[in-house]
Length: 199
DNA sequence: CGTCCGATGAACT
DNA sequence: GTTCATCGGACGT
Image 1 (cartoon, helix red, strand yellow):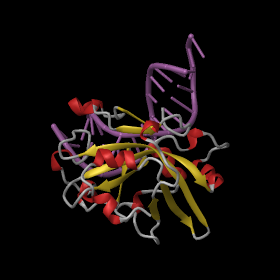
Image 2 (cartoon, chains in turn cyan, orange, green):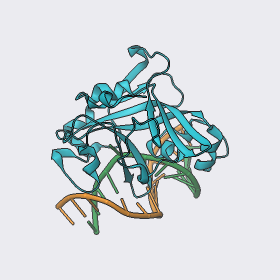
Image 3 (tube, rainbow, N blue to C red):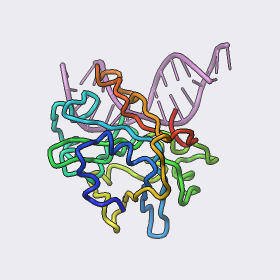
Image 4 (cartoon, protein in one colour):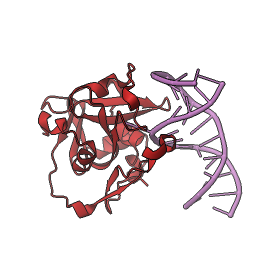
């Protein structure tokens, strides 16, 4: 389990790298645990970052969870359909977040396939931020839940196997062309060569 | 393989 | 009314 202290770090870009290779667990039912390995992330560093919902410390009912102490989930509805999952980081009133964009399925993969309505298991199952949340039954009802409790519905576990810095590639974030000079920041991170990352 | 486009809701002008 | 941290289906190459 990643401890509460892990999330208090002010360096959200560094934390976005650190989350690669970590395990995310979702309790689907008392008998079915879904889990996978994080293979793609993006850092959002408000208040400066124009790409963040919390740019310029904007506070709405939706963004409120981003202002809490790190270690909780920020989940919002994107384009009215997709539930996107972020890890809140940093201290109270410092609205940093890390979007999880892709996950490599590990436990109960066939249940994930059913939840996605897919006929077979391919990287398309979980290689996008709206795809893997559906595959792991994550939705708005999890917004604000802590990620560091052993009994929690969603938990983050530390890296099992080692991952060298050379295995991480960075590039500009996607879908944020409106963000002016912030759109080119290389704050998207992927595990090099992993077939489960996005395109 | 690629481009186009509708879905569907929160937040904004 | 428009935009938006997206996706899958339709159709052309």
